[in-house]
Length: 163
Image 1: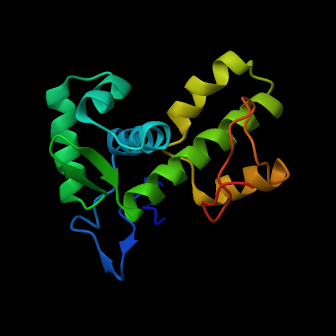
Image 2: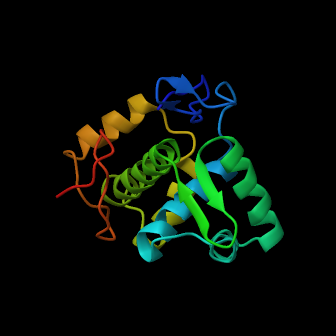
């Protein structure tokens, strides 16, 4: 995952070439959509426009517009009436955001003593701006954890799920 000076994820390399808008940082909204679509795929095997809209709390028209944008950025493939499927590049971004979120939740709960009810919202705000260096330091300080404070698995530094 490459980062600009502000540590906002940018489009990853796809098969040795860059996706169309490689220099544009990915917005928080794009990151949230990719994370949500990843979770929908994991739960149901596919992500329909209706399910994406419900997950993101937006209209179906808004979700459809974002899916078209993500398709144009080669972060997912959309087949009308069949749903959307993340590409390897889209999955990589989603896993990176999930990793940031879950490491932050654990850090906030265990190190700073925030109540479990508060860590999710704080992690949602911070997951988009954490640097790779800070991510690595949090990971190390926590002893390379495999699960967040809610018991959900944390992808490792190679974005692999714990076994």
